[in-house]
Length: 152
Image (cartoon, rainbow, N blue to C red; front, side, top):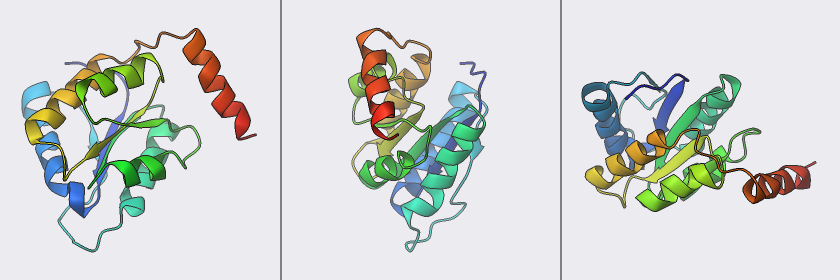
């Protein structure tokens, strides 16, 4: 698989093991370039905003994308979406990952480290990466515009 944009991955302690598995998946199976923004070791006291928000910010600043992992994926999603320019979706299954691209044009994928199996998470991530640039536009673009205008 080839990607031509910066890709970042980050987690908290609850997503650490899944992040490690995805890093191996990227390196050994997908052969894609990415940057691991931490944590670099397991620490039960890690707080997801400390890793998720900087990763989301870096993705936006560099016109890239982020894969963000916490226990449920929900905290990662809330945190990431506080970063202006980040549109992150909870990837709870393959269809959600695909729809997040086609209908919502997201640049962040949040995963549940305590819920998803490694195999399911890898399938979700692969589908999400494959669907880059598949945004349908039309009524979906209109809806995104309404969201953007609400915050102004």
